[in-house]
Picture (cartoon, rainbow over the protein chains, first blue to last red):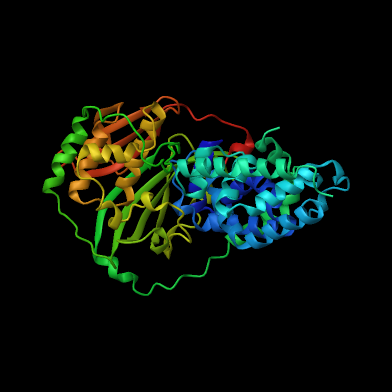
Length: 185
Length: 318
């Protein structure tokens, strides 16, 4: 499949509609990832903008790259940059109130979910407190299933930078939980 | 439960949408793709017109797979082996006699290339298709600055036959010249990975230093060698190194394990050449860097696959 990504993108340079195949392959996972970060409404816009930006930059896609996945998540991360305040605000609301605006539309039994538990509330606080670059690296690995190398490629940083961001960020999320776990009213 | 497990469960109730849920989004995207984007203002861009160089020519018999990754901060790496590729060593020697460009900040470097790619997939009428796309590509990149300062134009040429396969009707659509467009809206490469002239002209001029630069943060295994070989290929395609750095690049590349000589190479235009090639058994690919057999001027790169393309399920086709 990965070899075919480059073929699709090359073909779309001549036949724009071939890019729809790239959308069909990656839109479901990408939509879920962006929705988990920003909520449903913002995700619709970000995903649409991501694929449009990717299409317009398809000439820069290196056909030697086996998979378009890191490239697309990198573009999405860039597009999400405009929503960083809203992302942090929603995490803070969850931390303070236990109400998650992101997951609310998807469940009517949120009481047994991680995000509604005390651990979820403190986790939300920990994520909100991270620098954006650290949060990006951590969530690309935890939610988007990118490996360290793919994350480095997506974020345009060195592999060592990803390692240090994750090693810095991950314990902070654990620390927040052990400090606060079960402590919320 | 470690932090990654906890994170994986956080907001896990957000569902992965079904393809049918995204149909409207896909339709909107398709509509947008058919609408040409607004053209950027191109004031000042003609400055670079006079500084053309590097006629490259590329063909890919099957689109494949080398990942050019950003590398780690400097770490201890393996020593550079003895150079063993006579082709690349001669290419290094030949740089001394080649015309040297001396671009200045504010100018553009223009890269013209002709690119052919295999296009495989299913045509609109549901028939399996395979043909070669053919395109003239011209990229302007600033002497100083990342890809967001670049422009691209070119011409889509008529498709070429893949022997034994019909050319699908849609391959004849959207041919002709396309107007200059901005090359990239953003360029996320880290500072040390930029390949504009302002950066490449500051790279090491000794082969060992260049070899260290190429392998920084990478190991000494097959994957590292393939990554480096792919990066050399990318550098030759659309970046410009002064002669001293170019010679160092060729000498360093000559020491990459697994590089062999292909005495009877031929590029997409049918020009004969001599090539340095590297086989990657894992992916079944061979990437050749082809040089003029007399002047050792770089001509083209060719990526080919020796494994038969797998038919694959419909979703894997393009």
